[in-house]
Image 1 (cartoon, rainbow, N blue to C red):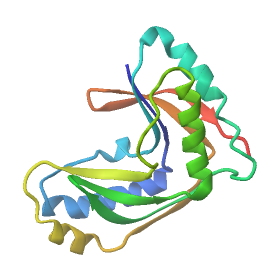
Image 2: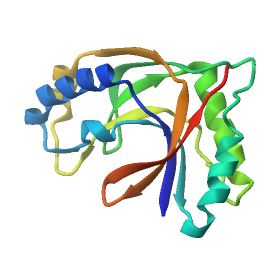
Image 3: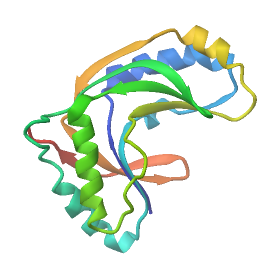
Length: 175
C-alpha cells in the first residue's frame, strides 16, 4: 500500500482552482493534476504493509492534538511557481501547519517510516512537465492568483493506487 497524509481543500476553493486550471490547460502540455486529487500533503509515507494498517492509524491518531502554541492551521492558497518539472500553487500555513507536519513525521517514524531529509515545503502540485513547455506563457497567464483561505480541522490518511486517492481514515484536530 502506498500511503500519505494530507489536508483536504474546501469545495469552493477547489472550484476556484478548477476554473483557474481550465484557463491554463490550453497553454501547455502538462500532466495536469485532476482537481479532485488536490490536497496539502503533510507526510509522504510510501509503501506500507496492509497487515499493519491498524498500527499506522493508531500512530496518526496521536497526532490529533497539535502543540498548544501552534493551534489549528489557518491555510491560504495563493501564488504559483515552478520546481523543476512541477507547476505548483503556494500554500501558506505558518507554524501550525509546520508543527502538524513535524508531529506526523515523528509519529510515523516510531513505526520505522524514514524521516524526510528535505525541509517541509507545502504546495499544491497543479501539473507536471511531460514535454518541452514554454513556461513563460503559463506564468504570464497565471498571474498571481489568490484562491482563498480556510481553517484546517482535520487531516486524512490516504491510499494512492493507480493515480487515484482513497481516504482510509480521518483525524480531527483539536485546538
